[in-house]
Length: 227
Image 1 (tube, one colour):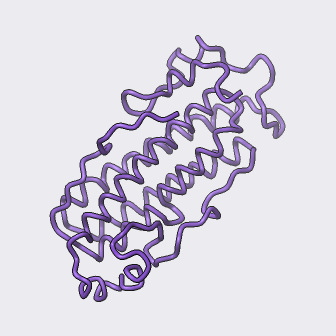
Image 2 (cartoon, rainbow, N blue to C red):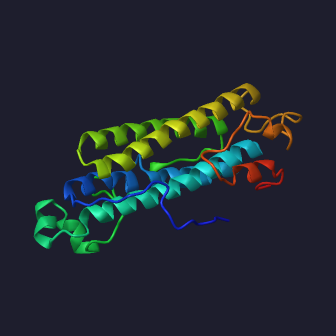
Image 3 (tube, rainbow, N blue to C red):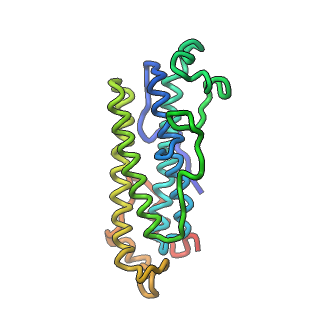
């Protein structure tokens, strides 16, 4: 169950329309390296993580990625909301207008619609976490490319914040990957009996929540989480 707060994770207040940037930024909404793919990837992979630590981490990051989707939707909307039809045509967004007017729709920067083939689940914790680490690095790289394409501080601010969250997520996935690499034996998908972390052991500092008030600690302490 999710608790929704009626605010963005980082404020978005873009004052100047820029259809060119709207066309580029939408790729982090609906593209292969975007936030929607990340949220669905982690939401699915969490179910087959071998312990509550992994389940809680993927659940928390997936939830944050949904917040990033909301930020990107807001950015794209603000960048194009005041555009005329002629301006949309000049920016190459007439095909988008034909089907969606000025409504949002998840695509990449070339207009290719979102597809579930952008992410995978294997049931192998190490394979899935390796994909997750790569996904975070690719998203970081795309945000850096997007920052290079604008000089508007109202656009750069949220993009810089989103880029930094990719760095943090990569680090958390890497910690979990290395932990499982030590514990999972001979390609096993489950931790050996006796190595499942106990509730008190989970709170000794070997794991910490992402950014302030979060459900991670509560989920992490629940030994029946998704069991």
